[in-house]
Image 1: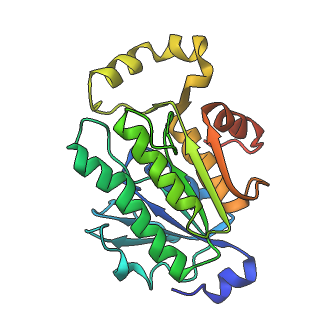
Image 2: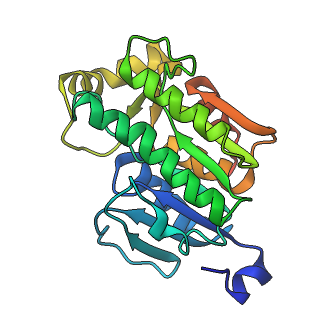
Image 3: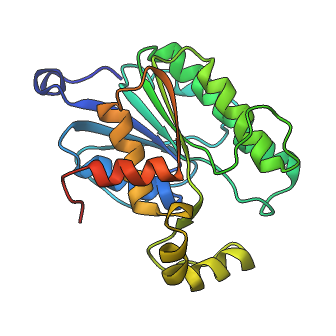
Length: 239
């Protein structure tokens, strides 16, 4: 989809968000829709979001193992925020790798072919291991996905490695560890501020990097401490 005349005249960007039904992706979409620099936000996911907005273009796509059908949707896009993922233990190991690595690579392939100048913000995770030596599958898979994105040829790739992501709004936690972390979060964020990040703050940082850039060349990796610093540097408050 090519930009409209109004979007070209205003200089507004066209942004794609994958995984907007998830915790971070939902905030990313909300922030994109409220961001005056974004003229059109395209959400790509497996299920309807149940929201409407004049800037929103919602596209349903069931099988991320093959994103060829998205080529037209991804044409003329300026940036993408990729938040698709799964929790460790929520799915079998083979499925975790497919979602974490294969889906990311396939989406990036089609986006690169349709919009070679697009920037790419990727939701990775704390401890991601690009060397592939980690004993933790999640770390290896995220590292593998990072390597693929950095080698894909995008002009700018922004990799975000948050530690514990605080949900902000009540939800059904995926496992006991997350229930425990949510319970002790008030004390945890004071004692270990660089090991936590709010879901809405993380989403804002990812969108802001994709839309405005960060001054980094080619590829940039942001650990939890860096993400917190990015949020502190943003002067405009987000309700």
